[in-house]
Image (cartoon, rainbow, N blue to C red; front, side, top):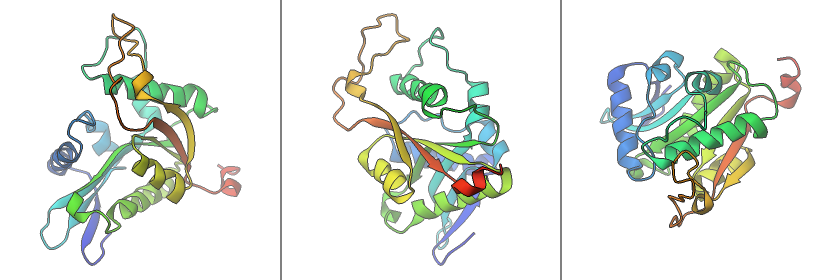
Length: 217
């Protein structure tokens, strides 16, 4: 899909995937683990990039995949060794809480679209790129694979505002990183983010199809 200034494309090759990973790393240094791409991203064809038409530069990307497949490949187990970065274990714990408690129904394939991250270069923010990336991604997930929901972790007030107020998402479990205990560490009294100065992190669920349509799925 294209508009006057940007084109929107499925991330379907290794070169574009590497460029998108670089973009995400530059935009989220010190805030997110840079491990968002694996082979499933390319195979599932649910992640999208935004390209600046005049320059050909990739200026935005949204990463998404089937939560069911992700959890089958990376099941949460408290007995597994701790990740190198604490935030990875915090995110895994939030995923597990969503599946076991927040979602409140059996997770099935092509049911919940997981959105680990979205990034847009700062000089292109405010131009509707993020909204268009979401719209195209949601349409593809719903219309081609039958996804009914999207799941996202909101890590700051801006993201939470977008997903809750603009996309009618429902906020579920909240976690305050300052009081989160890194349970997988040998020292189980370790609080790695006790100096965190941002707000809480929240699980958010977005419906991709109307209530009346869900009864026929």
